[in-house]
Length: 111
Ligand SMILES: N=c1c2ncn([C@@H]3O[C@H](COP(=O)(O)OP(=O)(O)OP(=O)(O)O)[C@@H](O)[C@H]3O)c2ncn1[C@@H]1O[C@H](COP(=O)(O)O)[C@@H](O)[C@H]1O
Image (tube, rainbow, N blue to C red; front, side):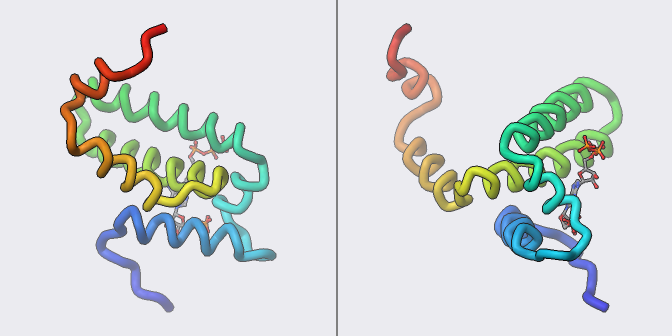
């Protein structure tokens, strides 16, 4: 039996999701969700985002942690579904570190 990890990073979660995506013939929520397509993965991410936001304005800190874990897992699934790597996202975050959020907002095309 494999040891249960005490913590899982985003990189490890993305690797787990990628492995499950490729694991044909094994029962897997990840595979089932991916098989339903990007729109379903996006819908689930939206639901988890709302549940996280609702938990954040409540009083149950454990619920905030639990909903945040659901949110990050479903983001990893959506990125897998769209073929976007965490490195792509990290590079975008890196690009933004040279300017403040307010500067970035002001630089957006008006419309
Ligand atoms: N981190 C997660 C994780 N977080 C949440 N979930 C599942 O996400 C689902 C979402 O919860 P909901 O209440 O919205 O589910 P639901 O109502 O059944 O969903 P729908 O019918 O609307 O699709 C639940 O079934 C959770 O078990 C996760 N499923 C998998 N993982 C990770 O992925 C690994 C592989 O899982 P499998 O792909 O199932 O083998 C696991 O070992 C974990 O590390």
